[in-house]
Amino acid sequence: MESLVLNKDNVKLKVNASDWEEAVRIGAGMLVEQGCAKQSYVDGIIASVKELGPYIVIADGIAMPHTRPEQGAIGIGCSLITLNQPVKFDGDDSEVKVMICFSAVDSESHMDILKMIVEFVERGLIDDIAKATTYEELLEVIKEK
Image 1 (tube, rainbow, N blue to C red):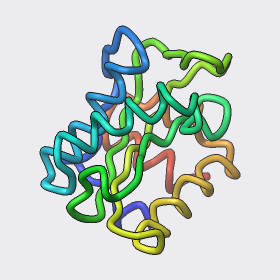
Image 2 (cartoon, rainbow, N blue to C red):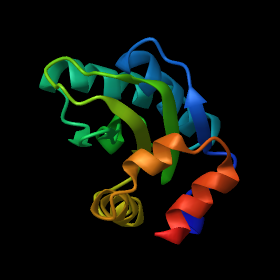
Image 3 (spheres, rainbow, N blue to C red):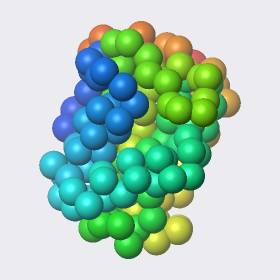
């Protein structure tokens, strides 16, 4: 499943970010670089978190930055970043160390991405994903357990 959405172009490991907002800008910015979203999509994620709270923190250690397609999604895409130092979102005590950002053009087009994220959480892979230092290590973690 990971081959559908993760590749060397949309994975960054051990990223330095001073806070959650910078981490979201880095991860969601990769969606812009891929041509899957406009800059307004990145800004929309941040505005939504500020307005609605940390709804993107879906389990301990992992956040799933996304917003509504009309905020600037152009296509289906995702990015995965791991953070050198975890970040906390206002109103949530979880230390986020893995972010999987995604854009989708409708509610059904992102199901593969959601399935992948749920699988990572259910298999207890978040800590191991966060420890990976190379893309190849990341793939081993995902495949081995």
